[in-house]
Length: 228
Length: 228
DNA sequence: CGTGCCGTTGAAGGTTCTCAACCGTGGTGG
DNA sequence: CCACCACGGTTGAGAACCTTCAACGGCACG
Image (cartoon, rainbow over all chains, first blue to last red; front, side, top):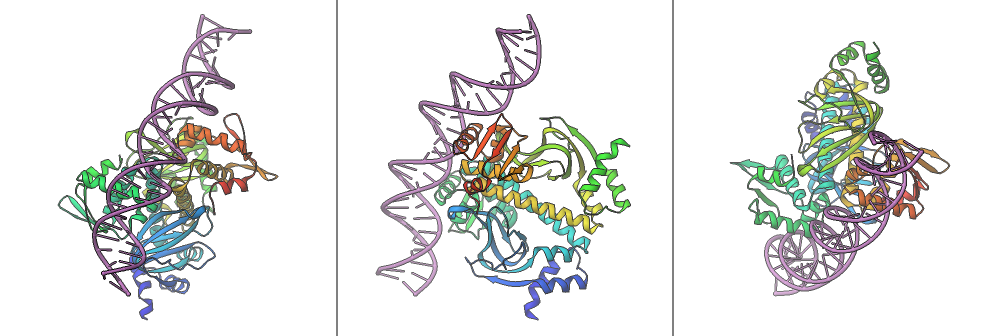
């Protein structure tokens, strides 16, 4: 029964109110409980879109274009729900930034089984719209912003999602490498490094080691991010 | 009662099966029937996210970053459902490419009212996931692709959505200007023009006037688009 | 203490942007 | 009817930003 616990976390976390026992048990039948070590791919059964619930850890959703180029489409943390398409213009995969535990559902069955539960479906819709809005903001950054603006934008966004705010500043423990940040912002690691240096020199951030970043003035940083 | 017809189109087009009369009449109470002339903004009541159904015409969803830079996030044609967020990192607006007619719903009420209709909500979820997947593919293009690949990607995508296929080629009547294409691909009009020239010289497309593009070999074009 | 990975820094190069001029089309008015 | 203008698109030259290539530094691990 210990094997079951992540699924129970999922049931408690995602729907606003617990789904009918029947729905829960049907979902339990199609779920795959998986783990991935830091740097490894989250194993997704081939053949169809998947819905993945991140139980613990942190992950990146990677799209591969031709010629080995990789674009990180989004980062996901525990509690997030990710839709991973199988057939698209690019090939997608989910990769662990830190040791991760996830629940994998075939999307088609997942959506069919939850359809009877209006509240549950409502949550799914809400979450997918949030994901869409985030993806659009990312598209704006990739399409129209300079390297500095992209990094500022990234830091502000991460601050809002996983930062610890205190007295006007925000401390951030990034789970991803410079390379990951570059692959997410459409830039190279060198450019990321230089922009970190530039923001540091401007007094907007402080860094300590590879992972910790302090946003000294998030509002000012948001301005530099080109946000409205 | 003639005023009512777009709403009926919506009811017939969007849900797989007609919603309960009660749901339909509640939706009818919150809908705003709007029009926008070519080049004009689709009027959205301020104060909250909106869901817009495009009855006829063609539209672009624009995000404004600071300094007047504009990024076209997506194009939408008749039958499409668009979510327009009010509070985001950037300011969004819907603009008509051709004279357009649309139905505007406040998102919150729309989602609440349709929640009781499982099939309807299912469709909404499916459509928002499609939008998310398209947005991700766009993010890959903006983050990791050259100008030529972006344009090829755009043309292939438009071909799939609004092209007329015939004997291995695909004729496309674009409703948007070169500037719009540039704003969508994160490039300038000059670069768009040069890449059109380059694809024309390569024999992959033919153009006639401003609007008509023939994709001579869509498969080859998809290869140039850097698709997997 | 050596090794390997990640991050930083510097110099050269390339793709796209910016600026500018020119062309073709469609609409307007004399 | 045709000249004129406005607008969108095309083409060219130079500049800017980011990438590429390369070397170096620091931290973790064996």
